[in-house]
Image 1 (cartoon, one colour):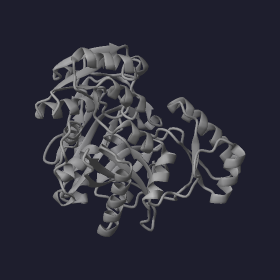
Image 2 (cartoon, rainbow, N blue to C red; image 1 turned 30 degrees about the horizontal axis):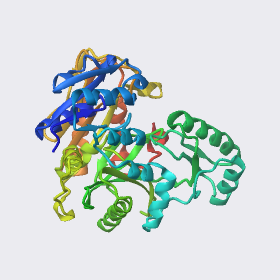
Image 3 (cartoon, rainbow, N blue to C red; image 1 turned 90 degrees about the vertical axis):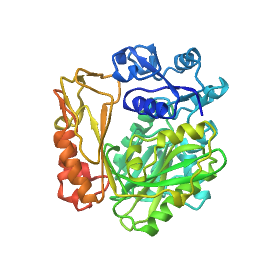
Length: 445
């Protein structure tokens, strides 16, 4: 195990990693921007180093400054968290060149699975179905139009690099396709520095289901079951739950096995999430793999009892999993709501500002992951997520009831948050009856 690591991130995930480190007897070094200088979790770190002004480009995305901080702090490894540099292949390579362990996969595996086109090809090699679409990137609009007509509308235009809904557009006919194709290329270039896009057939009213996997350096790989992430807006997840309530045991086993085949073929090490679309007939199609820990990992931790951040640290330090698939059990139902500083009444516009009143919910089966507190100023420079509310109960009905109660107790004022939106979704009869898909929010709210 490492003796000292640096956390190249901020907010609740930085705090989450600090806690895991300390429970393993590992010292944690935090970095922070000038905007985060008053963050409470910095006092919990064994050392805190300022790496620049508020702008992410000058701080959390600035590789030279982070590497310099790691060298000054004399750390063994760097944990990138999620977002920022977590899936940056160049950063992973620089860490390796500097003799610092990157707590995540090797650059080669990141390159293979991080590019969605290459990941599709890999999935097909291990007999995992993908959504029908182009075999590779398409640069010509005329070529793309021909393929769209061949596949049949509606189609999805997707950025080859990155994710999070950026560089993603839906087209229902030739006219909308032309505008969507150019728009997707422009956004992909701006977000990822890569304008390559590819086409997929749009699966109508799908569920978004993902499998949490972990693999060690000895070739052992296991899954920690699946999460349903169908409640989304603008392709951004809002609410996640485990297990997926529409899967039977046979389909669940096939889905999780497909995820492991992809991970093993990629010779992947550490945590990953393999994502699928599930159609109305329960057919599943691979769409992408995320080569990092996910925002929604607490859902899996609650239903399996395994600390995924600790497993990341142990595996990166050279430990074997020491688990067989039979050792991993699934118990009860967990639901997570992402609490963002956004105004649902204004089309989820960001709502930064100072929190003057903060009351967190509690009680049996309730977990709150957050770094904010009364007096904290939410910055406009970063992602708007400020907390994650997670509940765990024996049944889905009980989990929904506990989440609704916990949301009603959660007070974050005076800024606007997505708490009312989450509460409205959890109270909707179609959600309660489990009749949802990825378009649920747009249709009903």
